[in-house]
Length: 301
Image (cartoon, rainbow, N blue to C red):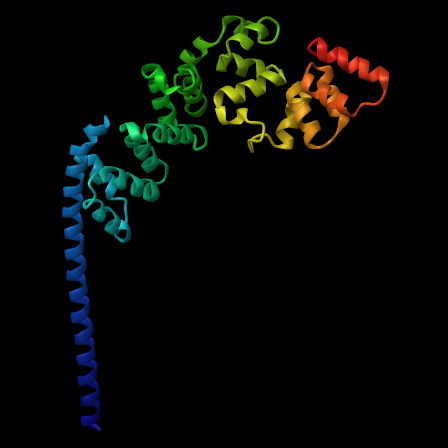
């Protein structure tokens, strides 16, 4: 009986010994991998710091290492493979965008903007980060670019300035200085014509707040250029309905056409939207109403 227990204990000791050896080996192997990864990160960050000026940017090695430290070991082989690329920086920036989200995508956009072949794509990504992801740092950079590089065709600096104010609450006093003084005093009464000629974002916002639907639409189009497309998802039935209630003829016409609802088209026509008048004329059989619609169209609503 004692021999049997001795044999069992011996077997258990051997098993535990093997497990302990495997554990120690794995720890050493993991430590070696971590040490190697740290060395590779330091090397890669040194290279990135050297490459960045070619793209008009700078990044200190310590800041780079802080970024890469947030990346799991599972993704690291992708970064290691970038070292084999002729131009590793775009490769690294693609992975940073994937692994770090908006912060990494901002870095990717800035890098792409530093090369003539990818400049347009970088600007588009930067605008997307500002307008759709609400990244204040992207909007602030766009404000600088709109001032210093007008050839990029960005919206006016005051548009991005107002966006920074809206998102962060910073620099709002100077953003209001951009607004037309007449609009600050009386948004609806005295500056409609001026806002049509100079779509100042702060002035449009004030006019919208005062209940002018068409200026709410214009403000949205100035602040977010992509919504100037009628088919943009921003223009839901609810959004169009709200602006129609605020007497925006374009929103009434779009909603009436989308829902095949003539009363809304009639309302839009009466507010001066000649496109709605034309659409009604296409199906109107009553001669008196036709004459009325023709008059509306010929006299601009």
